[in-house]
Length: 335
Ligand code: KG4
Ligand code: ZN
Image 1 (spheres, protein in one colour):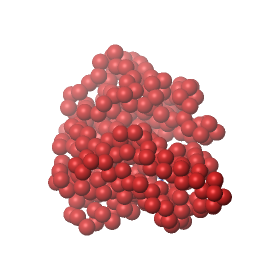
Image 2 (tube, protein in one colour):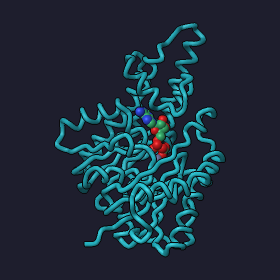
Image 3 (cartoon, protein in one colour):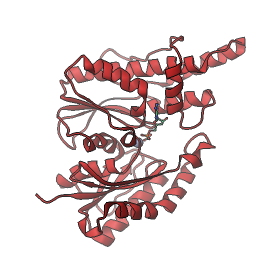
Image 4 (cartoon, protein in one colour):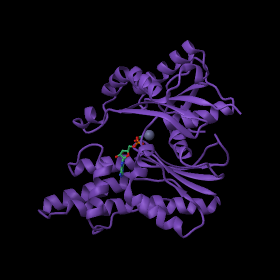
């Protein structure tokens, strides 16, 4: 069978990324231009600034991706792009670039859901075994997704308020740590001890949904209380106690769902998948089962375009194409 080469474009948040992936599994090139430095001083991603950077970077990153690959447009079978969810102005840059390229080069256009991309980042490491369960934990998402076959997504649980990464970033801000705060909390947590018993939002008995806003408020209240009383809390202990709460809920619900749905594989995706505490807890829990656990390397946990090309390959193989009126959809649902 002929090899398939799919171009991927990702601009949903603060990374301008272009990649080329072979047969949905092999990275040929993967270029990511991060804007973190520009957003840091604002303590978060500023949408206007993100869009402006994407415009400036997209053609440079595209050229680099081709250069790195040694391929030409003749080799490319289709152009895939994140159509949502994300920041609308940021998504629009990628979507319009993809449309222009697909039109000019006469290639099929394929819109991809950002979360499908995060899931398919794992296939660049190892082939999927169905049914599989994916835990997606990022700055914008906390979801448990059941997949019975390629391209088929059933969301069985999701956050009812803040995403896990969002909670990390907000707590980090309270501790005066730089943006994005997740990695800093992770580092501090490793040096601290669980001295504060923060709440765990288990929700209803049979629910796989999550909630992190109560935990976030509990941390903020505890810090305020201590400040008022002139009591000093160790930053490391706050981080460790907060992380223990997040990790316990995520890992417990993932294990329970994996058993209930009798999955053959559990995969983890999104920026928070980089968290050492979460990795350790999941590894410990799943080592007691015979369900294989797959966590991608750090580089594939955070936003990139190889994951979009990998997910786009499935759409391509299944004959799912987007029309030329494809639009950015900031609240696109996964299905
Ligand atoms: O997937 P991602 O790069 O972007 C989104 O699509 O949201 O995820 C970014 C999020 C941020 O909230 C960041 O603080 C968090 O992932 N993050 C971490 C760690 N590394 C990144 N959270 C906890 N521990 C980490 N080591
Ligand atoms: Zn993401």
